Each structure stands twice: as structure tokens, then as C-alpha cells.
Image 1 (tube, rainbow, N blue to C red):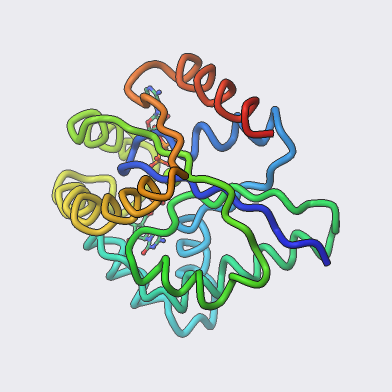
Image 2 (image 1 turned 180 degrees about the vertical axis):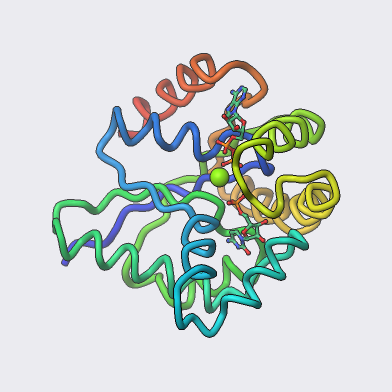
Length: 197
Ligand code: ADP
Ligand code: C5P
Ligand code: MG
């Protein structure tokens, strides 16, 4: 079986990762897996032993233990490939969020997936917070409120930025200015992807 080819998609909460991933899927042959979406689905799954733990972590903007998240990602990748073995290109959105995520991935997934590069959506904390507060009017998310967002931004600065820096040192980060409109951001994403593929 061919190794999966992965692009990690990172950026602050509300930087537009999910929005841009949808556009990428429409235009390129990627499968989009959002770690946050998978955790929210696991939280609501009847019989899940991790429901409460995930719920608490999400509300507090904390990172869920990597074993849980990686197991969900691995399963989703395997299910995708079982349905169509040609689907080897994955956008993994919102992961790795900290060094434990990254180390866990390296240990568990190294033989099964190559990380091609990191697509980094860069914008100010203020823009991130405003977008999430706006999203909170309709998202129903327990973490799209100012109290959770302050914690999410702290987690992003303390835990996720260092992971982006690690990849930067390896020359693997492709940075997009995420502060402009959706179409302009996507035009920049396209320029990057067209160079990579
Ligand atoms: P993330 O997945 O990074 O948390 P989302 O893609 O869910 O971010 O976007 C967060 C919110 O901001 C959503 O309500 C989305 O519609 C909006 N949004 C996304 N990209 C932009 C953009 N470039 N300009 C303005 N609003 C945006
Ligand atoms: O990416 P998203 O904004 O959907 O993530 C929501 C929350 O899910 C994060 O704030 C965090 O609590 C949790 N999460 C996590 N580990 C990841 C991705 C998301 O714990 N790798
Ligand atoms: Mg998202």
C-alpha cells in the first residue's frame, strides 16, 4: 500500500483553516480531516469513554491527549483508503497542536504517512477572536465565546506556535496571510499548492 501523503493545516482558532480546506477539496484531490471535528464527533458518540474528557478539554481550550486524537485520525485515514485506495492525499486540519501531538504522530504514523509540508494560516489574535465570536452566534460550539477563546489563543501561542517553528526550521512551512477575504486567501493557497503538486 502506498504511503499516505499529508499536509498539516495550522493557524490560530478562526484563522480560516476549515473554510480554506473545503475550497481545497473542491479544487484539488485532497481528503479533509479536521482533528477538532473528529474530537467533537467522538465526544457525541454514544458509548464513548472519552466524551467527558474531550468536552472539558474543548471548553478549556486545552489539547486532548494525543493518543485519542491520533487514533481518530488514523481510523479516518484508513476508512477513507478502504473505500478508495487512490485517496492518498490528506489535509489534516488542526493537528499537530503541540509537541506531544507531533511526537505521537511520528511514533505511530511514520511508516504509514509522509508529511509533505505545513500550510500555515497567519493572522492576528484579534482577527481570530472576532471571527470565532461571530461564528459562535450560529455554530453551537461550546468554545466560541470570549472566555474559551482567551484560553485557546494562549494554547495556540504556547503550544502550537513552537510546532510551527520546528517545521519552519526544516523549511516545511508555507505561510498564507489569512487576514484578507476568503477569495484572496484562497488565491494565495492556490499559488502555493500549484507549486507543490
Ligand atoms: P478555523 O477552522 O481555522 O477555526 P474557520 O474556517 O471555521 O476557522 O473560520 C472561522 C470563522 O471565520 C467562520 O465563521 C468563517 O466563516 C469565517 N472566515 C473564514 N475565513 C475568513 C476570511 N478570510 N475572512 C473573513 N471571515 C472568514
Ligand atoms: O481545530 P478546532 O478549532 O476545531 O479545535 C477545537 C478544539 O479541539 C481545540 O481547542 C482543542 O481543545 C481540541 N483539539 C485538540 N487537539 C487537536 C485539535 C483540536 O485537543 N489536535
Ligand atoms: Mg476548524
